[in-house]
Image 1 (cartoon, helix red, strand yellow):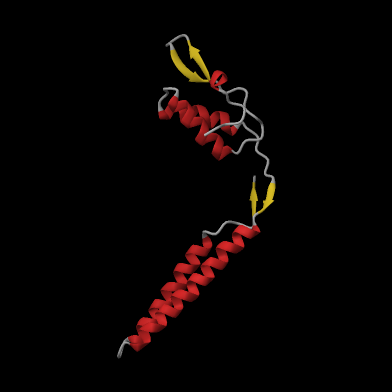
Image 2 (tube, helix red, strand yellow):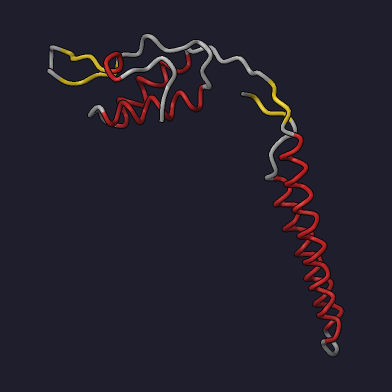
Length: 136
């Protein structure tokens, strides 16, 4: 992972009181995604030899102070591909469920339950499709 504004030389300083490695938090770009800031900062801090709790605290303070401005970007093609794929999957699943109708006595009930499961699962999968607009 790479963080804008971080270099190997600027990312580490030595704290003389305990002779340990500490992340230098200055010099980061102002337009940083807070979630990515935390992931990258904590990873680099841990790799520098600090404990996870120390790194989380240090990085939370630093990343919270960073400014992030959302730059909307069209993501409708990805959303439409995902949604279309989920609709196609649901139709195929429904078609497979219809095969259960040939089962004597309980076939209709099984087909209905299967179809309901297809619809439920397809709705769940569609809810995971990406939004039409994303921040970059």
